[in-house]
Length: 626
Image 1 (tube, rainbow, N blue to C red):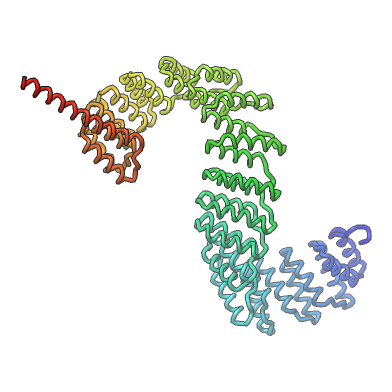
Image 2 (tube, rainbow, N blue to C red):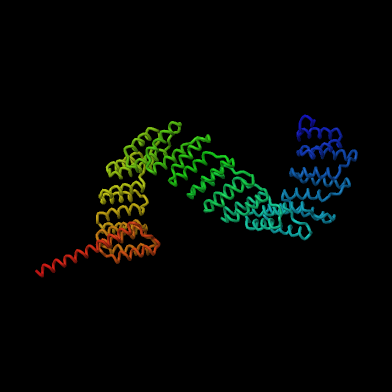
């Protein structure tokens, strides 16, 4: 039969059953043992047939199977959870004059442990003791595994110590069982300690235990260095970590600024010949791009190509995004060309990213060309695509062109969102077209798009830029009535607006209102007020604001200091101006071109005033002498 097809349990069982029924039990037992040798696992029906057959035959003709046969059948029953039948066989075995071996008892104990029948286990152990049969590693491992599964670690460790006292050295199975038991119970610290002991004693550790401890170290303990060390131990033992664990390690290392460690993990896998998944590689590239390390990200791409790592759309899109964030748009465009050469078709995400990069640089013609190209490639612009091109033209002060795309959006079946409306509104405000800006807000409300804090802030900024500060205050009140979260930005816009038209009392009132509402002024708020006070020559109040700012933990910047220096310099109070420059240096801020120009112009003005006064006095003296 074996010449034509490999027999399975369904082939053996009917023959064994038939032989038993024909009272040819010895042949049936021989066939059963052949199953074991061939690696074919008997089923419950097989065991029942054998048991019934040779038991009946034993009664009729005294056929006596050997201990090995009994053990094999008992093991089968135990594996199927039929432990009571295995014990019935043990009784028949004894009646036949056969003594159970350590293997027999080990099989029975293992079966009982799996069913959590530890009470019966104690009986079996006592019987073994009475017959002088000493438990071996298999028995201890079964017991330790059972206690660990039930969370009884003290008993498991006691059994381990008992093994040692009897001269039995715990093997890798024993240690791995205890360690994994700790893991299942959440006792990860103990699992780590035992793992370290196993490594020190050079006991074999399985990949599963390594993985459990590494995940815990990374996710729960944030001990990335320890996790990397265990990763290296795995590779040293030719154990391959799962792709999911590798990806997790690389991601967490990158998040914590350990990019070189992440690269080392990736590289060591390739050196070992294990290979790295595309997902893991993409995760590493993403981490490098997010940190602004584009040089290493592109270098990694080259290594991937050299070492045959599979690249996909995500790989290139991630690199293109990183390049655009770093304002390296040319590199992004080259990467797109490369992906096309590799047979990877750019998707809408690729185009959106490149268009955003071009729009941010004001290169609108090229962004529009990409728009046309993606449509030729049968790609459909999504809401982000429309938002990108509209915002780009608005920032370039070409609102007319932005409106063309906005109209196309309406015909595409997509609904404009608040982001797109805000872009148009800001575009009109930049062009001082306040009426059209209000029309945008009206359209938003008509179409059920609720204005946000950004909407109101943009409108206020536009009004203030044309000197309509009181109207901006009305918008602020409308924003408050809309129950939107008031923020420091909208208050600062209004404060700056009042300062620019010299209404410092109103500016101060808005400032106090903001503080009373629980909002903390930022350095822009303080600087706007200082500029207002300096403009009307109230340097004293401006200086008080600087002190208040520092006392409240708000760090002044160069603009803040330059504002004060300019105020003092314009009045010829150069000693105070130089004191401000000293404070600036003490806080680690380097004087810039504006700082030096302010001081030089101030000194020149003072000198000219002195020369003019001296000339005037000389003229007056000459007139008096005449």
